[in-house]
Length: 91
Image (cartoon, rainbow, N blue to C red; front, side):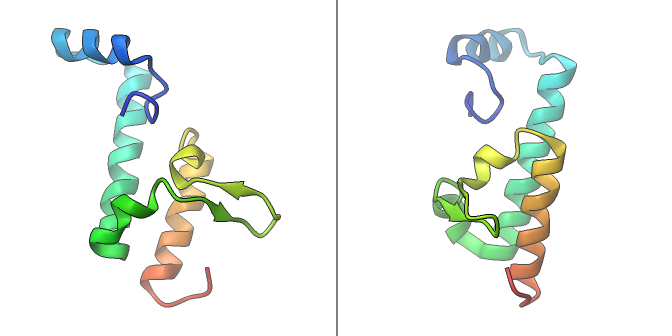
């Protein structure tokens, strides 16, 4: 979880203890939750296993979906692929 939020594990523990995240951390957490919910809807129980798997993109680069969601643009691209998978399109 700390890696997906771009936080050190100790920082995440402090946030958990205080009960508050910074605004940008909340944004990252919301983005992660949105993608995980969409992945579970599209892929079912396989989504947790697949989020750490490498994916070859159209540009020939290898990425993990969790690495791509560190920006809003990357998250939208992952959502696009999940949507195509869910509706039987080419992904």
